[in-house]
Length: 303
Image 1 (tube, one colour):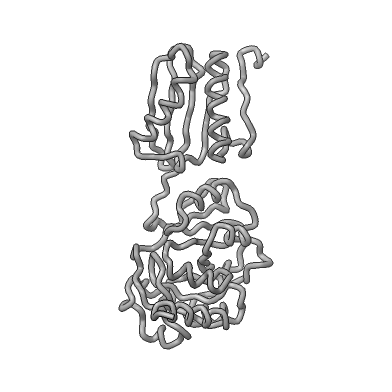
Image 2 (cartoon, rainbow, N blue to C red; image 1 turned 90 degrees about the horizontal axis):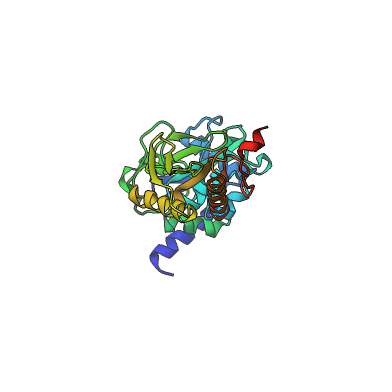
């Protein structure tokens, strides 16, 4: 076994036996223990001098591992995992309380999970077989260590194993709370969320309007005259807007479409495309549950 592998295995053995380990991640040096060992969790909180009422982040090695602890997974959670994991995004959502020790969730109803983009960290989690706690390796309220030499010697003396290494990003993760109806950024870190909504309006007889609306309130719009076949106009317009503003379909979190009243053919075309994209991307159309199609409202339907 080569040197690096021996170090990683030593850290895995320490974690499995209930030890506390300092290790590098993509964002900063972390200090952790296995999630399912309550004595180890209590010891970690005591070492860091962190109040038990303040939740701590947890690191996973896969989306499937995360799903075992989230109580439910709204589409926005799945979208964020698919788009930004592995990476520097911590996603807070409601958790299965029976499987999450109270201090980890700060006595609340939620858990913050992240899949780091760092092979050493992932190797530790896979080797242990369960998530590991992932707060930064510092005493509570002290500076975050982004380099090995930044580690507090007094903290190092209190743990069972230290894994040297490099933090590839060297910046805090972004934390997003998806337990609320309209998710919010709790901490802006290295990841900038780029989720957008596609807006389709083909109800008019003279022009088709397609827009991209960002969570930050920006709106990128494109209007074109109606062609003889509207179906051939909408999709190229969406593609043109995405490319122009450097988005991809992976950035799409929702779709809005004008359901009428309006042009009979236009409404059918726009709604068909919206439903198709919603199904393809696994996102909501007009706020309906994912997979549920919207239907047109024609002029006569109002009476």
